Structures are given as structure tokens and as C-alpha cells.
Image (tube, rainbow, N blue to C red; front, side, top):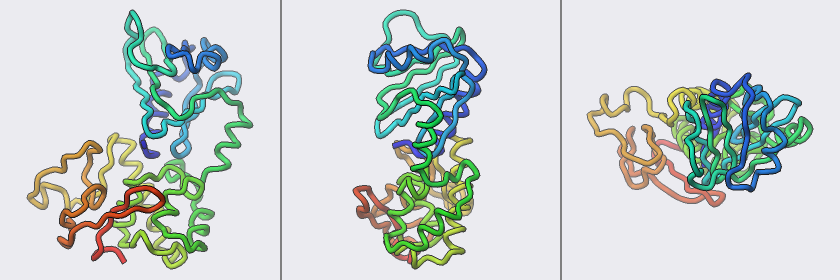
Length: 269
């Protein structure tokens, strides 16, 4: 599932390419035909992200709410839509004379108003990429006996953090993901939040997740670059059984809240 940096990057791209323009909206697949008819031809005023939720704003205070889920993809192309039949199951197409964007396989794609948008956002925790005040999230984690590795993935606690950023931020903080949130000092929780915000901002710029410090980059360590579908240089995510880049201890793997979990048994306590 795309993490929050991907959705914020997408919101910025949609705003840059389509913002301030009258946009044609269609549903070649047909499943969003009614919603497309409501907003097609309207001015796209901009797109915003809150965690993993994308809101595309149109004139008249109408929003297309998109959640990509596990399999969704939203491709933005700075070129006119090709002629002929649409290839693939395109739920929604945005189009102007010079650009188009195709949405495939989302969990959610619907037109909502301000009240419905606000209701969705009210269920989400603060988002490190929006500059939100983290006080409520950190206080909630600090009161909880649940594992911090589970709490960071709870979108009602912190919006936008997924499996990669969860694993990597906890490694960088030296915190075992199984520790109860209430056992982590408030100062450490704040450091994790600030680190997440910084890492995710880098992800928005680069379009990939990189979390290793300069001294652990491939060039600095004389090691080959990581090869993985997810891309990016990381400490523990999907490195089960491989030596920790800091201490050489084999990286451990497990499950938490039905998601894969990775950590270093030596570096994280």
C-alpha cells in the first residue's frame, strides 16, 4: 500500500498539472460514471492529501475522494490522452488538452462535499507531512499499552505512516517495535515524530523511501546498492536474516496487526 509520502507527492503533481484548469472527468471502466458526470468540465482547484487519503478539489466545493488501497495506481502523464480504446480498467480519467491522468484499482473513488471530507479527516490522526500538531498523537501513544509498532501504523493515531516508515523510524530511534507505547519516553516519541516528518519529506521529493544515514550509504560502506521492488536504502525493512548495517546482527522478522515487521534485536530495545 502506498505510504503518505506517495499521496502527498501525487497531490502536488495533480495540482501542478491540472490546477486552475477546466478538466474532463470520465470513467472508462464505468464504475465511477455517476461521480464523473458531477464534476466533469469543472475547474480543478487543487489536490490535498491527509495521510493515505487524496482529495481532489473541484469548483463548487466538490471533492473526489481517492484511497488507493493495496493495488491502486494513479498515473499522471503530461501529454494528451491517446486516441482509441482505453487500455486497462481505468476507474477515472482526468483530461485536458495537454495532459491526462488515469486511476486504476483504488479502494475508494467517490465525489464528496465539505462535510463528508471533514468526517473522513476527523477519523485520521495528525499527518507529519501537513505540519500538524503531534501533541494528541504522542499523548495517545504515551498512554497506550499497545506495542508502538502497532500504534504507528494505526491511521487514527498517525496518518500516513506505513510498514516501511514504521520499521525504519523505530530502528533509527533504537526502539523495539514490541515495546508498549507507554514505556517510551516522551522525548523519544517526539524524536520519532520529527524523524518521520523529515524522512517523509525526502520521500515526497525523491518518490522513494531512503532512510539510511550518510555513513551507511553503499558508497560509504563499500557495499552494493539495495535491489528491491520498493527501492531505496533502508536499515531493516524486508532485510530479514541479512546483517544489520550498524552491528551485523541478523535482522529479525515477525508479524504485528497482520503486517510484516522487521527490526534489529541488538540495536532496538
